[in-house]
Image 1 (cartoon, rainbow, N blue to C red):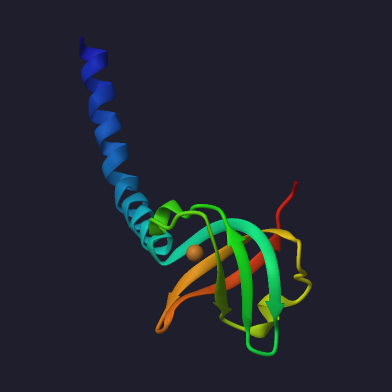
Image 2: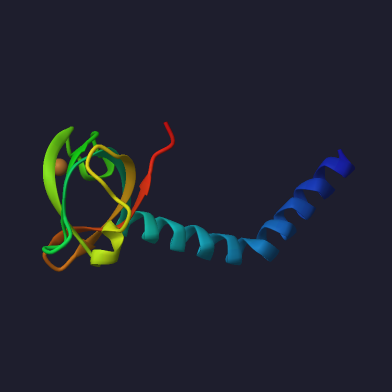
Length: 110
Ligand SMILES: [Cu+2]
């Protein structure tokens, strides 16, 4: 009984000691997740000159988007480097002033 109470006290103390940091980190992670969404799909067309890429993407639950084929704007043309039609990719989306933009594309391991 006594030892049980002590473990509770110690657990509480530890929780308070590190809790602030953990909570802050968790908050930051949640915020980052809200802004950046990762998705997968297959590249249909790359338009480096206009900074656009057409992707047949899988459903993106975070955005409530169904599976579809669409053009995405990339944040920077460099994002399209090494990306080719037919590539299965994993990409990251960020909410920009004009809608969602792709910030990163990497080939998905198949
Ligand atoms: Cu879409």
